[in-house]
Amino acid sequence: MRLRKLVLAFCGVVFLGGCATDLVGEKADLTRVESPVGMTIHPNGRIAYVVGSNFDLDYRATDGGALYVVDLETDTVLPSSKRMGSFGTNVVLSEDARRGYTLTRDDGSLVWFEVSEDGRDIHCPLSGSGTDHLLNCRINLEYNPTHVALTRSFREVETVLPDGTRRTKRVDFDLLMIAQLRESAVTAVTVRQTEDGLYHFSHAMASLVYSASEVLWHSGETFFVTGRAANNLAAVYPAITEEGEVKGLYVRQRLNVPQAFSAYEGRGMALDPARRKLFMLNLFPNSILQFDVGGLLGGEASAEPVQARGMTTLPGRMLKVAWVGEAHGLLYLTGFSDDALYLVTPDNLEIVGKIATGRGPYELYVDAARHRLFVLNFLGGDIWEYDTTDPLDPVMVKTYLTVDSSEATEN
Image (tube, rainbow, N blue to C red; front, side, top):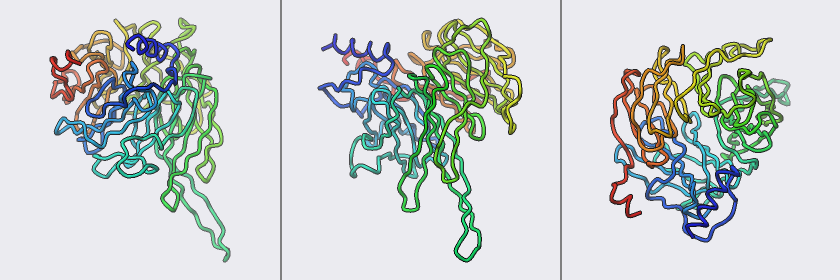
């Protein structure tokens, strides 16, 4: 049985989306966080939502992943946590924090859910009350969806009433952009509520970025998409009708990567607060690149492609990057292989600090208003919180979900 799990886990890594094979076995354990890869936090600062990937297929594929709801004040996993498909990715909340979205690569799905006002409960409105899963709230996208970003947008529809008067109706919607590892796919999705309270989804896919891996919202309806074997970044945007329907997806501009790279493996991305500088991690070689993207803030793209303005090699494999602090803040990078956070200056990309984290730091979440930084550790299965009032001197505040070493040994 152990050999079979290892083979299936290998399949999930090498063939990107897992083997999509239903296993006879146990459902995901909703009482403790395992193999976490994605995290976001409710605006109230108390509730965290953590994606458990079922990376090594300890549980059966169909419902072996999980979306854990964690109360940070009591350091407990709440019973409102839900099961879902395996090989989950990141998780995002809508602007009003009443909806959330994540992806499961094994079944190629966009998973959506509703969130209670206090953030303590998540559920699929298409399932019966008391269900412990989100399996009924899935939109099939195929092509191995691996990362999602969102913003809130709208359209205005003008109609002429029978008496000849004109009426303008505003259509608001969540706009999601999704990177997919296969078929060079990028998908735009709009989600809006109809007058009777039901959710309406529309989406369109285009082949834009080879092996698309991560996506980042920039401004308006423009997103950046990077890939794991690409030769440039793409700034993409959707074509959306007055009724909020996605009809197409287009490249606004391609951002050329330095000529030294015939291809690169793009990973985490971050923007400065002014949204004029884009920072991207690369794994071949391990490096961080800076792009000047201020020209994309205007209505029209500049005539010349935006070029990389700086690059620094890194001492190891970095997976995620986040901007911490005000306008003169720092970049924080997760050093997955050496259990550390690296502090990097944004102007000259110089490493100016290194601090310890849990095992296998992966996702970063910045709570800028409260000067808090949360690090989700994949191998440790825990969350570490830092006070970043002084970005140059982060202070460890607390760890969450830490498993006692004797218990970890028994398991």
